[in-house]
Length: 149
Image (cartoon, rainbow, N blue to C red; front, side, top):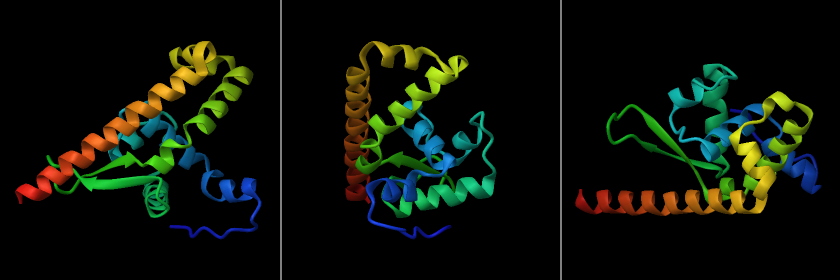
């Protein structure tokens, strides 16, 4: 896993130190806008990330607090990833990248882009609330499992 070396205190440079890698943004996209949560789910994305790069980026995202991993309750050798509040805070940034990309790549549209064009603030709020609610539910489940053991 590559270590983050901050080149300066410039806010753009600092942000790019974490988000300047296309794979990081695509993993975050999948965590935010789809129900993908496992290594296999991310491998199945149409961009075809290599296994070694995926593993590295998931470790990087976890180490820096953008995602958390847990062991799957069904399969003990499978990890499930979920976005943290720090990652959820990136929704507006990722939305703006999506809208910019759809403007210059018209084939890159879809239902989500149409919704964003109609009510960007509402869509961002809905995804944020849904993901925060899911985080709380998962934390409650994990606390309940820990208490029962």
